[in-house]
Image: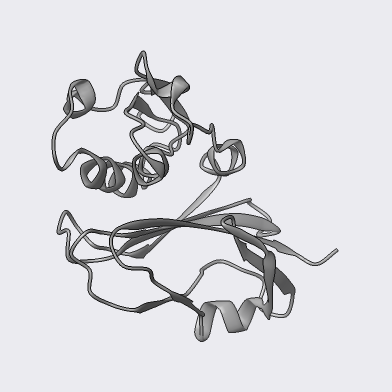
Length: 182
């Protein structure tokens, strides 16, 4: 029954702003995606990191988020969140650990990886290893912040060796998009 329900409001924790709200929202998405593919909560858009931390299938915005210059619906990512889910790196609720998750189409032709560098992570780079891909197929991968820089790797390379990304100072929400070559 839980799998067939659609919780429009998954937690009251998002009812008001807290200093750890965005890390908590990432952790909510990470954990609840095992059981519920479509959930929602309030969106508090204060900057790029907060907006990307709130990516979920049903983003219910507060009264002012839509006026923020960084506001975006992230439609591609939201659409993929109702299909296959793969946890990639469990950072729990600690702000000194990375948190990463992947959503892919059922046929593994395309997907997204949401990667969160939290405030106290000191690493300079991060290697993301994707899951559930077709090993012999070639995938094109790009960061939505630098769409002109495209990595071309096989599914086996992405799952076994991974893709190493540079990490900037401070917190950052990285969104990778990937698809098979046509």
